[in-house]
Image (tube, rainbow, N blue to C red; front, side):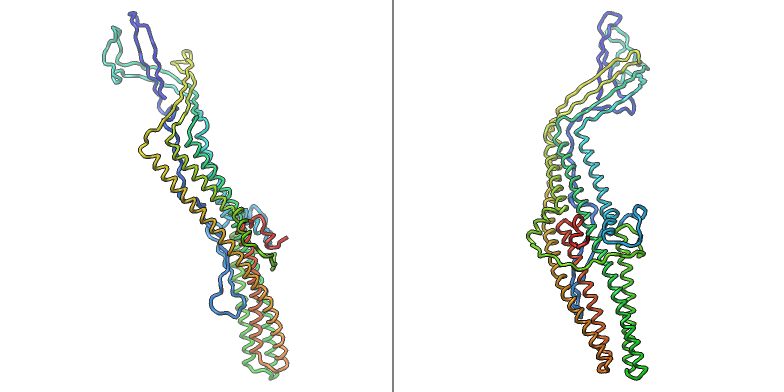
Length: 518
């Protein structure tokens, strides 16, 4: 703000001379001034969804085509975006080499990249809220300047050489002056700034809910991946047993061939079966190694398979589920829906902020300091200003701000409706998957018992010489398939239970209860 000091001096001729001295800021000096209009409404991005993106999708898909297996479900797990990676946690937490499911989930919650990225988004939202709040708080500053000035009066319109008989020089100065001053500006009434702050605070709340929801997703991703590794390990163990059986049968067939009991074709058939089991074992070991690497990537361990999983999560039946009650629980607990609610409130506040640009604003501005040509001649000076600004027409800016805010608000409302529908679909889908998997477990257990009994009966017939080994090889294949069916159905049921916990919004807080982990 420029200050106009009016000084009256008595000239030597006895007449009264008026001199208007204009105080100009020195080069680079910032001079506080009251705002001419209120704050501008903040603009939200069109979508309120988390910019971090990413998702964890688990479910069951039917096995394509025909199969001799009784298990017709294939567990699918997709970890997308930042949730598929992690930061290195080896240096921050020691690792013994044996990994339990609880340790894996804890490491995922600490080091998974999905949660890490959202944590930084929360910090950014908190910073934006602090900036919005600053428009409601006093702005205090101080300046100190020293100026040497020479003025050409002709450039300000004083062309005459005399004024009232008093000679006036064409050039005044050079002369010095200094100014030391503290300034304060405070917005007293600015509805737009207040609504902007409320909107920013709601965005911080939304990001807090997104972080809690991300923890649920991390538990689902890490838990499902751990169950996949555990199942892959069981498949390798089962295949080792099948290879031992095939090797023993081949040796038995070779001995019987040596004594002329079996034909060479029977021996060859047994050998082919043994070699097939060896190839299956290598394939399953390769799958286990890759599953381990995938798990390591989720929890901050080195991306290799140099560790072992120590927990075997078995089958545990659950009680009957009331789908209606589960839906009510999910809608009350899901953090992503709470984030949608907060985003909707933020958009409502932003629309109010845009509409408030039409309202008057009130601010106060003041300064206090000393100035003069020297410290001996310094004087204390101050100013106080109250400013009421009434916007009459801003060239359509307010209308444009309202339109932008309306678009964001409608998008937030649409996203909330979609979130409700998505949550209902996830709950119903998880319930169906649990029911289907539980049925598969029951059938697979019965099938394995029958297959083992049939294998033993055929071995007895072969030893008695009333059968060849064609039936034996087929029975051995049936046992191997039945064992894999049991492993796959138990895996499908446990993953479905984790998905149900996530659908209810309880994965991070209650996953142990669903998997029956002490």
